Image (cartoon, rainbow, N blue to C red; front, side, top):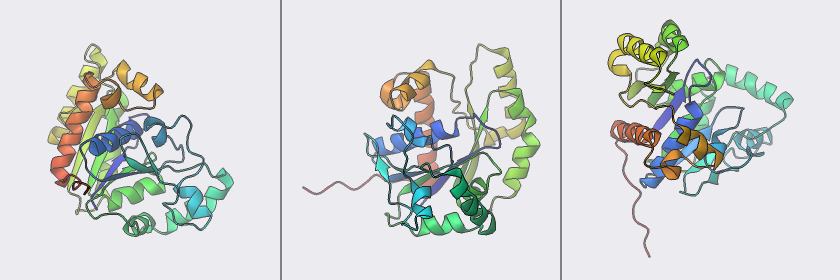
Length: 258
């Protein structure tokens, strides 16, 4: 059950958007896939067709002592995902303490899922160092570190190094993904140059460009590869999906018997 975690010590770097796009793109390519929204902001479903954040999700199931995958959903291309849900914040406090104390909690929940072994599990995490972000990094096979085209991403070099120092050596791969890039802006070009010097080959060549089509697609509850397949950002997302396919050696779903 290969696991891909989208993670960052910075907010607003496109973790959720990219995770959602990978879910839909893999489903379109007939790979078995399951997305899990580990962030209390509960926004993954907004990129997958939900008009409002799901009220029920895996967190509400856990708090009710139910199986945590009770409220799984599917979007229009049959990408399955588990929303976080909207439990009362006060009820999350004891669960948060549990995540702090039980470092293997998430891994145990994922191992208990009754899904095919080749299902690609995509983890959308809260901002590092939230407990579930730390747990996702420890149990992932591929770690996608999201950064944006800004000075703050360049200044976060030591922070990201420290974050990566705590991940296990069993990871298949670690990569940095640059988002929101506009080649017309000198500050963005300078940030890209600096990040390439800092990270070398860890920075993926598939840069996600700033694109109005991404915003319009979200407004329609779609991924840009569905809404505007000819857009630059759609090509960017497809490049990242192809790279991940190679890392995880994904195989398509078998044909359905008549």
